[in-house]
Image (tube, helix red, strand yellow):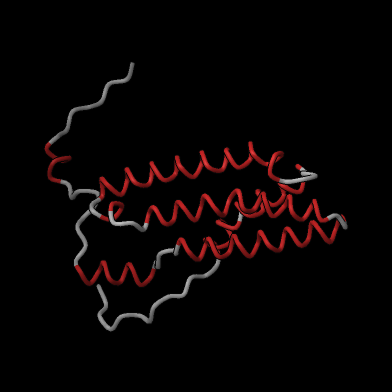
Amino acid sequence: MKTIAPLTDEDVDREPPFRKLTAQEAQLLRERNPQIKLWKVLAGQVVVGALVAVAAWGWTGKLEAGVSAAYGALAVVIPAAIFARGLTGRFASLNAGSAAVAFMVWEMVKLLLTVAMLVMAPKVVVGLSWPALLAGLILTVKIYWVVMLAPAKRAAPSETRVS
């Protein structure tokens, strides 16, 4: 069993590993690292879902494959839209604690709705093609990474510089 050494006077006198930012430093940090908008990700998912559905239809020549791919994309987009709406509500922005709870609750809602839609897929989609559905689902989910890696629009640098 490992033991942790007690704090020494040197440890107490040392500067803490973090410090509070000034208003100017916080503003500069926000300008350099803009937030990714949930609705931008959702719009990207809708576009990719539509493209995958059209591609599946065109590649196989079967409308059922396109509908299956579209349903797979909808199994991502609809729960993600509900999640985004839940996170932009009043309760989620009250304080850090309520934001964390709201995130967990809406993430659970999103996951359960996605699973429910996948379970219902054979009953909802006539002539369901599981490979096309999974292609639509996976490619639509992966758009998160594309949006996150795409260069964000950065605000013009502030006149106030922090040294």
